[in-house]
Structures are given as structure tokens and as C-alpha cells.
Length: 141
Length: 273
Image (cartoon, rainbow over all chains, first blue to last red):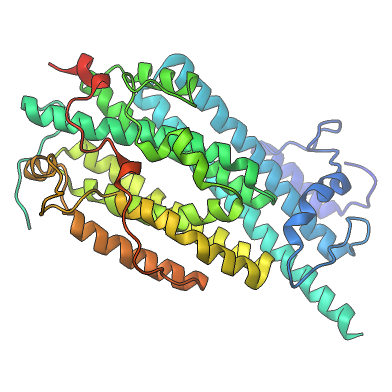
């Protein structure tokens, strides 16, 4: 968590959140040193429509769509973790057998995964709107 | 409103009733799981990330439906872990002596319906309303634990229908008029499957031999004619929402749902009292 100017008030907020379990990012993990540009190359196809044929690369984006793109990719990361949770619980059903406890645990996990996939979709829509708005501005110049 | 005797978990069930109940439950549970496996195979058609993630969600949900129903069957003395084992170890050709999977969800039948992502989108748009209608009737059935899990399942099946509409609209958004025209041509093959889903009419020469018994027991709560009307109404509204038209003169394919009307099922012989 270095490399940018810090606001002391926000830093105190972070300390307060830490009392309830907030943990600052740990450098080195894939989630904390994200390859935004690389991931974007895999995901940008989601934005190429008949109305928006040219989708910018990550480096070509201005700060506003770039932030929307990072949120979109972070939503995907959350979905990925919950996907793994579902796989794990499904594996336990295969390994240990069907029981009410395991069936309901799996049900909770897939509900959470569903929410995360919908949030991923909502983030896609937000980014799509920003990209479309910027494309309109470019065309009108 | 029809009146029939209802049963709770732990109640003693008459022999014929128990046999009929397990027959319907096993077809639902085994077919939900096999259907999920087929949906998982369709991932190869997903060309965009959100489509892939949404399909992945659907796989987990369909498997979850199987787990709900198997859990109830376990209470009735069925070795459901053997069914899960068979399906997970032989996904492409499960042994009919061990599990009851409707014909449409067997790989050799399913595969010929799918060439592209548009087919995947249309399956959820055109066939899923039939599942919504057919499985929806179990929400009011006489075995109350089965009715309750089907309330949960029904809600998610509606979600799958919404996925189909969303995915179909996206296909057209990306592909424009040529894609819309192509999809329109693909609707009848899925509609035949959807129309066959709820079985032959309850009257006439081709009537189901088993329907009267299920209806009398309160296990099936709607007649095939009523389910057909419900299906066509749902389908019509969703096709309109997408901008597609309802095809005319499509005839049901009952072979794809074969199993729900069969008599003795080898896979349940061990569970009989």
C-alpha cells in the first residue's frame, strides 16, 4: 500500500475497519498485483457490439473507464473465488455423500456465486455505458 | 380445487404411492444432474466471458436441484450416493439400470441439438418454459417435502428462463438481423422438445397409461393440456420480448422425455419395500 499520497483521515478510517477484521492488501498474490492489461485482453470481447466495434486496450483508456474496467475485473475475481467454493462443496458431496447439511451449504455457496455473477454483469453494463458515451463524444468531434 | 391426501416426511406411505413418488423423484433428480452435465458441455460454445460465467452458474443450480431431490429420496431409503456416483463417473453413458435420465438429456440425443451459442440461448428460452410449467406442478403435490423443494427449484428455473432471454437478446445485439433470422429457424427443433416435455394428452387414444394414477395420487396436479397452455403462453411472451416469432404447426416430440411414464424402473428395484 505505497506509492500514492495518503489522506490522514482515511488512514484512520482504515485503522477503525481493521478493528473489525479489515486486512490491508498483501503484495505478491495474484489478486493484489493484478495484470489488469492482460486480463482486459481476455475480457474486452464482451464489449464489442454492433454499436461499439472498436474497444480500447487497457492502456488506451482514460482514468474513468479504466476504473470501471478494474471494478469489472475485480467483480470477476470475486466470482472466481465463489466458483471455487461451489466446486469444493460439490466435491465434498461426491466424496462424503449427500446430506442435508452439505446440500444446504452447497445451496448457500451457489446463491453467493449467483450474486457475484450478476454483479459482474452489472459492472459490465456500467463500463459499457461509459465506453459508449466516450465513443459518442469522439465521433461528434 | 382438487382434494387429495397429503404426506409429510416420516409418514407411512402406501406401497403404490411410494413407488409412483420415487419414480417421479428419480427422473427429476437424475435428469437434473444429467442435464447439468450437458449444460456444462455447452460451455465450449460460450464466446464471451459473461455468457460463460452465467452458464457456469446454471450448471451449479441444476446440480443443486438434483441434490435437493436426492436428499428426499435418501429419507425414503434409496441409495442416492450410488446414483450420484454413476452419473459423475459415467457422464456420457450412464447405466439405465442405475439411473433414470430422460432421453433428451442423454448425450447422444442432446448433442445433435447444439451447433452454436445461439442454440444454447434458445434452449433456455424455448425448452425451459416447459420445465417451468412441468416441474411447477410439483409445488402443490401431495408429498409435502417434495412440494417444498420444488418451490425452490421453480424459482431458479424461472431464472434459467431469464438467462435464455438475456442470452438470446445478446446474440441479436451482437449479430444483428442475420442472427435473428438464423435463430428464428432454430426455434422449432427446441419447441418440439418443449411440447413433448409434459407428456401426451390425458384423453384419447395416445393417452398416457400412467397419468391417471399420478393425478389420482396428487403427485401430478395438472393435466398435460393445462401444462401445454401454460408452456405456450410463457413461450409466446418470451419470444415476443426477444423480438422472435412463435412458429406455427409444430408437433410435440414425446421421445425426448421418455421415462416419466414408464412402469417399472430397474434403478429403483432395490429401494422397494
